[in-house]
Length: 629
Image (cartoon, rainbow, N blue to C red; front, top):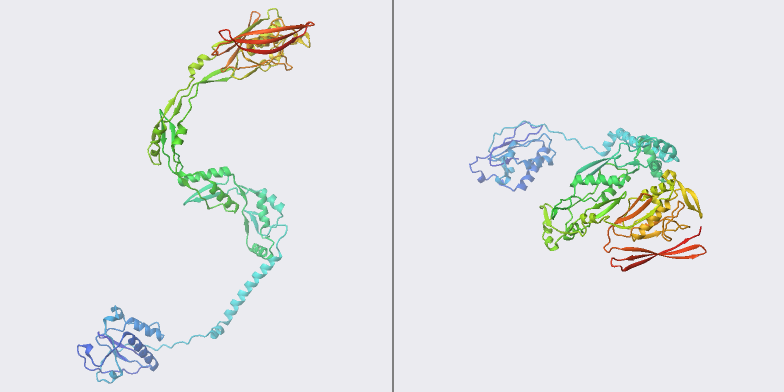
């Protein structure tokens, strides 16, 4: 059967047993191919169908037909491929190269020769292609044939699979039957320490003799950046007993199937237990802050400083917020899950806090501070005054919007408030007056007694008391002993005059008591002698002893006072220096004495007068009792 296109090509098809060439004589052909009466135009679908039928007929009959092609190209690739696929054409079949010369079948008219064409008188001498040998198609193998052919291989594979399954089952049964009790499982390691088949105590002792987590580090990640922390730096230490217990419990869940599976795996594979660990929370948080500053930079708040007549506001910038709570919990959870590497942590950035007028005013405001004094080692030091500061709120408000991240430095003016007491004025007031003074004579005393008076006077000399301080004679003078510089001299003891170390010290306490009375200071504790003394009026003496009787008074003024005690020419003088009162005081002592059987009772009063002689106050100093010798 022949095929025709507009361009003339010769296509020949050979069969393996073709013995002679079949020639077809075609009628004389005019130039106008479309007007030939011996062709029939068909559609593309009909063409494909007829081409397929022709190919099938050719194969079944074993003959080849020579087709004449007039003004047509070779059969399209698609039609050829369809025919080949349908009849299982061998892979060596290659379509004519001219098939690629056409882009679309719509550009050509196709015709197919009918049986009538075979009887025409036109004979075309068409070149014949080399006859192709007929390829014998092998029949497909059935499953039965495949099974018969490969029976030995299939049996070998089946035996292999069954053997493997049997081995696994035996291993699993062995694992179930040999779950260890009371000891570690086989192939158990804590880090690189083999604790297989050991009891808990044996494993604990072995692990304690080694160092766990010695070279362990923590690696963190956040926003594409990583951070390595040395385990030693953050106090990463193993919880040894908990770690050994974790190793002991591996493969011992109580479920025989799960435990058997784990135990069977341990026959073949090593199981490594990661130590449970502790970490120092504060150090870890500090490291997380360091990492946060690496990721986001350091957060800088808007800075406020006091300048010369202005508050200097320097804008800050965004950085790490400083909140490590979430990140710390993430690291802790990861460590608890035996994971020390690639820990993802959540750290956040934050902008600087927005400043308000209240913030700025609270920073800028300062009360003026008066000059003051401090006392150390009986030395008074004047502390200079400090001027106060305040803002004009309405004026300062206009500057607040100018303070923002990325902005310029902003200067806000402030105003000063003056302190009421300045250092020069305070210095001029300190110890500018003698509040009171008193003197007694010890000219008739022995050398030892006179030495004791001088020694005690020297110990209280230059003592400074701040406002409200309480003075203790015994604490200041110390124990009356030879080691403290005192000598043996006459003194009162148990109603008698005896020799004792420190005799004469009471004359110093008595002289101080009178100076305190005339200085109008507060008396805290005082006790009179058992017998009247010759160096002070009745009711105006003050005895002291090592056994506990003490003389005490307090500074009730607003400024420091100083005790000045001197001895010279058999006389001791004690003065109280301080600051002159706004209203000077004049003090008089009034003693009312009564007597009974040689014993005398004295009731004493302190009368305080103003400069005009008006009585300001009358203090009851209590009663003094004196026995007759």
